[in-house]
Image (cartoon, rainbow over all chains, first blue to last red; front, side, top):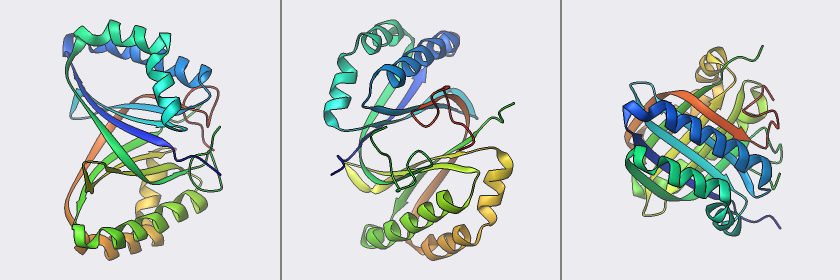
Amino acid sequence: MKATPVVRVADIEVDPAQREAFISAVREEMDESVRVEPGVLALYAVAEKDDPSRLRFFEIYADGAAYERHLQSPHFRKYRATTEPMIRSRTLTETIPIQLSSKLDPEQGVGRG
Amino acid sequence: MKATPVVRVADIEVDPAQREAFISAVREEMDESVRVEPGVLALYAVAEKDDPSRLRFFEIYADGAAYERHLQSPHFRKYRATTEPMIRSRTLTETIPIQLSSKLDPEQGVGRG
């Protein structure tokens, strides 16, 4: 039986003057997380075209335990400490997955990698 | 050379009374799109836990042409026609990809499937 993935959405507005530094830190953290954590299935970040200091995150974890482990990982804790002063506002949204269709898993939805 | 993926974010609020019908239609459309369209890499839909009639979409296309083809596809057009009366508000956001880290492509980012 497949665990239900945990999906988190985050909307983060960064200080425009520190946008590049923020992006550099978040790229490193996302890359590392997906590479070393089996339960971190996908971490996506995009900027709004009309206001590139507004960033949208969409994150897929294998299950709740994988998400909790991610929050405790050294790379995530380092990223949070580094970027905290660069952030103007942060809205984290818990979600209920409706449909996760990806070429990652032709059986429909997101598998365990 | 890899084309830059096109990522779209959509925030859709549906009529709560028609939520199940909307979800059924959108699941069918997303499943079909990822299955038959080579350039539709991932379509994700989640509901906000605090207000499940508010849905968040995160969509990844191989490039702009793949996105345009998707809009013209019969399954997408059928979905739009079916669900239009169920929707209370819709915000579509164009984005600039910052980082797309997924176990889909160990080379970092989203490949062409």
